[in-house]
Length: 153
Image (cartoon, rainbow, N blue to C red; front, top):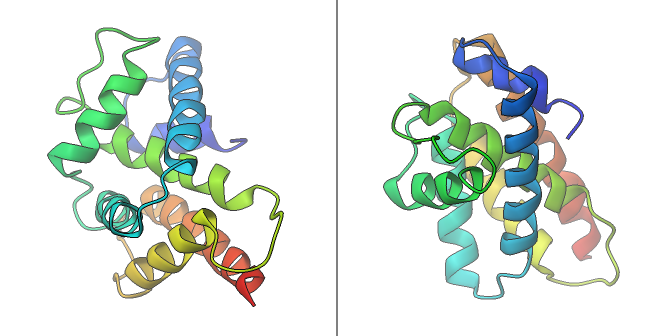
């Protein structure tokens, strides 16, 4: 979560300490929620939505946008994802980094490994982004994914 404030500048708007704190709380909440998901289809669908928000034009799916919006609104009630869609990719990407950076307590296919495999697969087929700041975030998520899949041996 160290890079959250830097990644928030992707959107090009002025970032306040309150913005960073509300996004930090959202990232923690999302990581906790998504880290408990145990249905493979839901994990794959969510990871694909996150990869989509990290790549392309940065526009999140409505389902992902609403999930992230609800989480941010706990600390920043006026936040609307359709006004700041890049924040959805930033928060969801950082939540995935949090999940994938966690300690592995056993071998095999764990929830983080399932997210990692799906994210790695989706992100590896995306072209590099022209926006350097967005590409740095995308590569940060992409770079954490293989380290988690290595533990599934």
